[in-house]
Amino acid sequence: MSQTALLPQFSSIDLTTVESILDHLIAKNRAIISRLGKSESSQWDLVMLPLIEANDALDRFWSPISHLNCVSDSTTLRALYQACHQKLVAFNTEVAQNEALFHTFERASNAPGFARLSISQQQSLLHALRDFHLSGVDLTADNKKTFRKLQETLVNLQTKFSQNILDATSYWYLHVVDSKDLIGLPESVIRQARSKAMEESLSGWVFTLQASSYIPFMQHASSRVLRQKILDTRQQLASLLGYKQYADLALQTRMVEILTKFWAFLMNCCGIPNQ
Image (cartoon, rainbow, N blue to C red; front, side, top):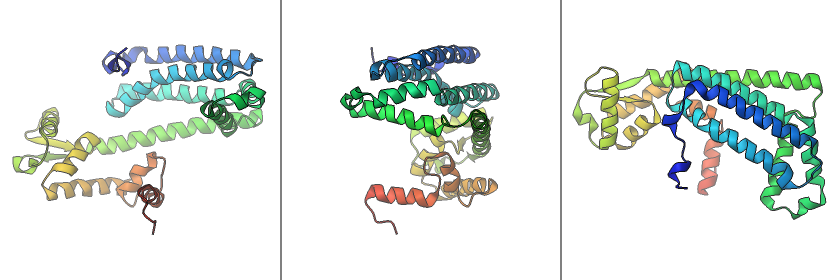
């Protein structure tokens, strides 16, 4: 099989079938999990591997949908994504609070054969046990229910936050009418800007705050005035949302959410003492 064949075929995605396919995959995975929860085996390939393969099948289906939601925003896709994402989060929490499955994994981690597993196999099992605890497998029934409700609320808030950022980012654009302001830009970027202008029924070229438009413009455009205008606009967006600077806003959806921690991490990666 060629490497190209392994890539997602976005053009073949039918939004009308996404939710039903997801429901089918979740039901299939739920059956596998039920079987694993009743298993008496402590062998990694009979306990951990089936779950890894089931999760991989689900991830391979959902990842292109999630990516499409980020790059091809629409009202229809938003509603579909939110409905499906809620189902996924609920299912993942259900799995992570499954005591029978937890005990199966726990038994496998305590079995004599655990020491003979590879490091990656041991870690996959230990991380799974960690995730059970972090998802409330040890909680009482009432507290598990509370945990699930909090998870649902958090997902809704995070999704809404991401949509608000996307709306704010998509709202602003830079309309360029003088070709001199395009000096230094690659032809592909200019063509993209021209196409965007035509979409907006404008002459000239249009640049947005989307990464595919913003980054090349900031890297290659010779016009310092226009680059500063884009930076100023990003700052206004951040201020509007209550952030001191745009970097603070951008980091809200990153692993390192605080700017000072980001700089410390970056300096450490570069081998530069953090001051």
